[in-house]
Each structure stands twice: as structure tokens, then as C-alpha cells.
Amino acid sequence: MHITLLHTLPAAIPVYEAACPAGVTLAHHVRSDLRYLAREGLTERLRLETAAHLRKLSAGSDAVLVTCELLGAATTPPALSADQLLAQEVDRRGAGKTVEVFCAWPGSVDSLQGIFGELERPASVAVTCIEGLWECQNALEMDRYDCLVRKAIAGSSADLIAVASPMMMRAAETDKRVLGPAQAAISQLSRKQTRPTP
Image: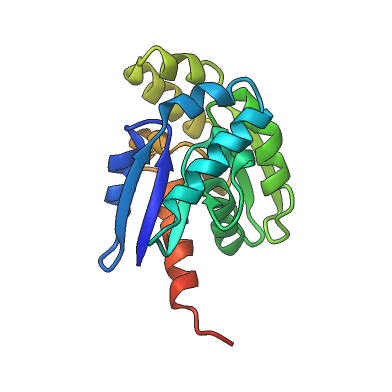
């Protein structure tokens, strides 16, 4: 299976590579400019720029994946957002469990609530933006970033924790409750690929 990924930060690449199993190959494309466009909201320019680039990436790929939480709402079929696949994996694993979803950008909260709020199997789902995380990411203060993520995870009483940003997984790997977008997305895409046709 060959998956093409659209990132807005190069730091996401090693996280997805680490989650990639045998038999799956990844091709990475970084568009940092889309990240800055997304901060203005879901504008027509963002929709058009994202859609045009996704069309280019779709050739020769079994799947196209948008990995940035900022671009989830701008993702159009046949491309998929990591947020959507993360939600599907949460639904698969979270039956009867309390779930907390952590994000970095305040502007992502509404779209994530829309995606995760539709899940039927978890007992409850809460979406939380970690205060100060966005500023740390922009200032490249990654030690502080990791500290804030660890503190948020340690303070959560949820049975299952989902993190919308792949970079959060660096600070979360020791907590078995935590599910990241990279492992969730690739797991879901691999499952879809191997599922027999009815």
C-alpha cells in the first residue's frame, strides 16, 4: 500500500515513519504555507489551495492523507484527514470508555467536536485545547511544548486519550491510554485496504 501524506510541518514526518508497518510505503509532502493560511479560518483561498494540491498528490497513490489538524475541515474526498481516521479508531477502541481529545490550536476545537461528537460507541467525548501549546509550537519551544503535553495527559481522567497533533506523541509514548493520529490513520487505512470486497 502506498500512502501520500500532506504535512504542514516537517516534524510530523518521523512520527508517521515510525508508525509505518511493513508493506506500507509513505511519500511526504510539506506545505508550510497552508498552515499559515489556516490560521485565518476556513477561507475560500484555503479550500482552493488545499484541494488543488490534493488533486496533484492523488496520482499513483492508494490513499492521500492530510496530517495537520488545521487542515481537517479543508480536506475533500478522496483525500482523508488524520482527524477523521483518528476518530474512527477511537470509536473502534473506545466502546463504553470516556475519551478526551487534545489539540494544539484553539481554532481546531469546533471541527474536532463535530467529528468526535458524532461517535456512538464511547461513553463520552471531550475536546480540550492545551493552553499555551500553539504559542510554544510557533516559537519552536519544543521542550516547553512537551512539558505542557505531559502535564495535560497526566491530569486527564479519561480512559482513552486521543491527540490531534502527531508531535504530541513524543511526550505521550509512555502512557498506554494515548492514541496518536499517525498510528490510528495508518491502522485504519491498512484495514480498509485489506478488507474484502462484499
